Image (cartoon, rainbow, N blue to C red; front, side, top):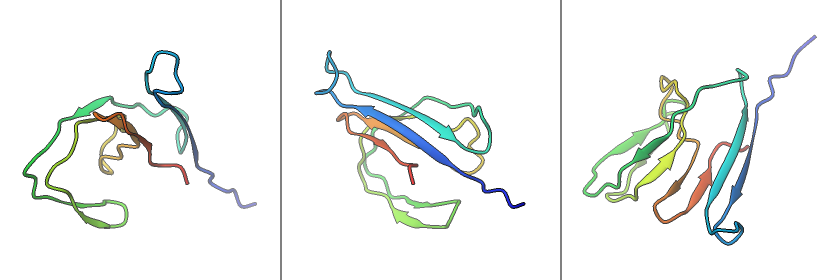
Length: 102
């Protein structure tokens, strides 16, 4: 019998106009290889004058990064051996994203 490996993530995002006090929220689960996967909470500082190209460790996608970027928060996996995998977060402008739903 062949078993299927299913992987699905679910996110709930609440914007400032949808919360009672104007806060923004993000909540997500991961249905991946392991039931509990440790996460990190990080704050990436704003950047300016950057001259860098990102190369994905997964598929070698190559992207020239912009010279400037906003400060943002993210919750990547604790294990960073496969790359940053910063799956969700908010920028300093309160723009939120969740990047792993398929």
